[in-house]
Amino acid sequence: MAGPNELLTYVDGRIMAHSQASPTLRRINESTIGGFYDTERTFGGKPFRLREHLERLYRGIEASKTDPGISMRDLEKVTMGIIDSNVSLLGHREEFTVTQVVSITQSQEIDEPKAVHVVVYCQVLDYAPFARSYANGVRLVTPSTYGMPRGQDSGVDPTTHQQVFPLMSGNDGSITECRGANFMFVADGRIKLPDRKNVLPGVSMQTVLDLADRLGVKVDEGRYHQGDVYDSEEAFVSSTRFCVLPVATLNGMQIGGDIPGEVTTGLLDAWRAAVGLDFVEQALAHLPADDGASPDA
View (cartoon, rainbow, N blue to C red):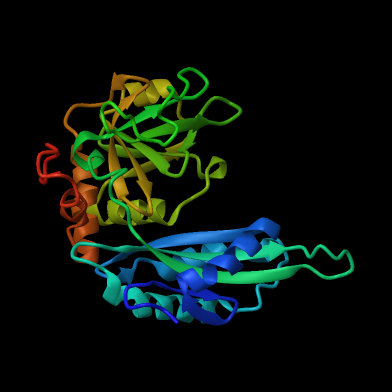
C-alpha cells in the first residue's frame, strides 16, 4: 500500500507504490534482453503530446514484431490514470516526467518463452541540469575534434554550470543531432534542420516545426556542416524535458549574439502560449536566489 507521499507505478496490469514495485523492476531490468521506452513531460500536471509519443513508441514495437499485450489506446488510459493518481504529490512549480517501458525478458529456462513487461511511472522533473541554460545557453562540442572534457560526463560543465551536448555527425561529415536532443540553427532568418533521414525525429522537434509554421519562420532541411553553424545567427536544441534551449557556443566559439536569439525567443514564447504556462520562469524559480540567471529569458 502506498504511503501518503509515495508515487504510484503501473507494472504488468497492477498499480502499486513505487517502493513495492522496485523489486519487480530490478528483476525485469536484470533479465531484460531489450525493449522500448518513451518519456513525456507535464505542463500544469497535464502530459504534453502524449498520443504522439505513444505513436512513436508503438512504431518501434510494431517494427520489432513484439506483442506488448496492451493496445496504444489502453496504454494511453493507463498513463493518464497514473498521472492523475500522482498529480496531488506535485509541489509548487513542479512537473512530472512520465515514462512508458515495454521490456522483453528471457527466462533462465531455455524452453520458456520470452516475456513482455509493461511499466508506467512518474518522476518529478529535475530542473537543475538545464534551468540556467534558458538564460546562458548550452555548450556544444563535436566529439571527433573536441572531446568531452574530464568531469563533464554528467553533461553539465562544473565550472560554468552550462549543459554540454555532443553534436554528432553522419558518415559524410554533415551534422545530425545532439545526444538526447535535436539540433537546429538559424541563417538568414530561416531555421536550418539537419536531414531527417539521418536523425531520430523527436516530438519536441516536430513541435518546433509546428510553431515555426505558425510564426511564419521558414524551415530549410538539408545537409549542413560545422562551418555553417559557426557562421549562423543563432542555434538551439530541443527535447522533451526543456522544450528549447539556446546554444551559446560550438567547440568554444560563440554562436550568434544575444542568448537566446530572436527566433529562439519567438519559439519559446509561442511554446509558453501553447501550453498556457511559463515553463522558463518555472524552471528558473528552482535555482538559488543568488544564481544570477535572468527570469526574462
